[in-house]
Length: 166
Image (tube, rainbow, N blue to C red; front, side):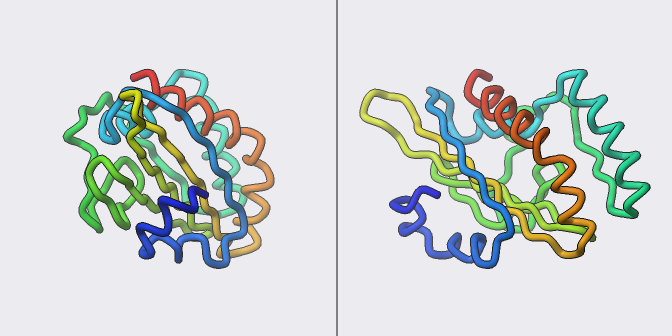
């Protein structure tokens, strides 16, 4: 968690309260926050489509909500910052253009927040910190995340790379 940036936005602190799992990754890019988020949210190689088909089977067995990601190519205008707006399968919690974007996916088994913070650097690059915050709502959430956690690391890293290089 980027402590300096979070102190500037106390409304974001409650995202971490009681979290069962957090992960933070960072990268640098010349992209704006909007451009980064388009690459990040709409990353959809064929292998990921197959993984989500497998996830659908697991969802049925565990009786958890299935998720249908929007894989159509999107433009920067599809990224919203107003609370309550939709970005892919996520709902915007908080956002400020070229500063940060907090998104939430809520299901019957868990709640997952993604917080992306951008800090301009003196060399013209932007530093992006992307945090995943997961809260289990049911034993199925804990079990499900145990199963997908190894894939989460891979997918999350590839999504960040896609946001960086878009």
